[in-house]
Image 1 (tube, rainbow over the protein chains, first blue to last red):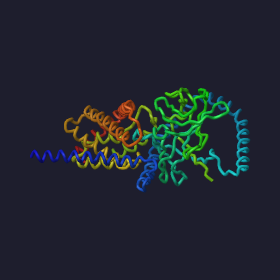
Image 2: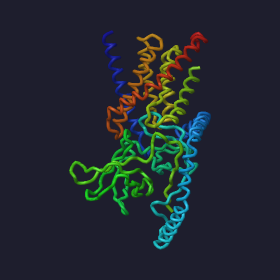
Image 3: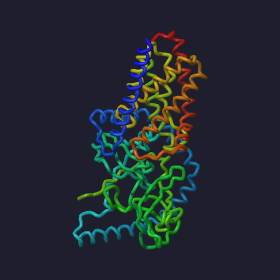
Image 4: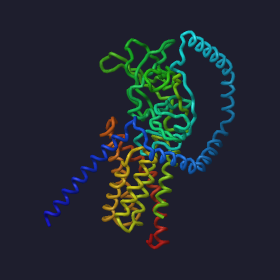
Length: 282
Length: 160
């Protein structure tokens, strides 16, 4: 009797150890960013996207109506703000046209087909957000059938949101820049007067919604409030995508380089619609 | 009826996640909560484990893009729930205690495993916050589900 009990206890312990090892291996394999979804996962993902869109429709309707009501109260302030912006629009449009002409001429002269900032736009709606809490991921309602590919940059009107990590036929998973693994080593440039200084994002702090940018030379003066954008270097993001504005500049522990705290332009708590950018390759 | 409650909670978790901020104060865990509250509706534990496994598998496939991770975690949670139900009677206060313990274990377990297999650095404050964020909304939801389950139990006299 005693032996049988001891045997079953030992058997249970082995079972638990094997189960934990199995979970670790499976989890490590499934969390790989370069993993492609298998056909079953693709069908499941597409199905839940459609179902969630249908189930969410009445809730979204109520939410939109409520938002519209709130916005109606600020209508006059909005009108004044838009009136001011309208006056500036004409000059911005003409400036934009001039710059585009210049880019086209330079591309012709240099015989370039694309530049780092060339991109194609695809709009998408977020259908579910950060389920499972730790993953910092959202699901959008556009997939490979809509032209989405793994690795594309995702933005909203305020700036860079994240990157497409998994794609099924009619939905995709976006890993947010707030994810620790995602925001690591993104190449960025900071505007200093009429020039740029280059650095790398080393981490994101969710409490303050700030990034830390490192690798900047000690003898550069960076003012608070300067724009921080992507450089387009590497294969991840096109250039010129807004990251945020500088907030605080300090030096590292060895007084060799500057460490810049950048306030993220995107509010990761408030994401509804996003745009997927495809970098032009031809 | 058990399947219906589970499916509704499963979908509701996806819908509600859309209306709460990504890093906000409410983190829905409706599927796990429902799994805890509907335990008295099962005659056999083996059936309960099957439901937990399938629900976890659906969670993996539909929501988190992981492979059988939540299926195993939900089975483990089901095992804990059955053990706790052996010593605690079926009333709302005890259900609340089980929910609080399960949320704590679930968050710690998933976070520790993620720290082990990915390059996330361990942050005890983030872990505590995740548990606190999961408590309020889910305890309110558990009250609703508990009320529904009790109504069903009365109506069908425990036969499912």
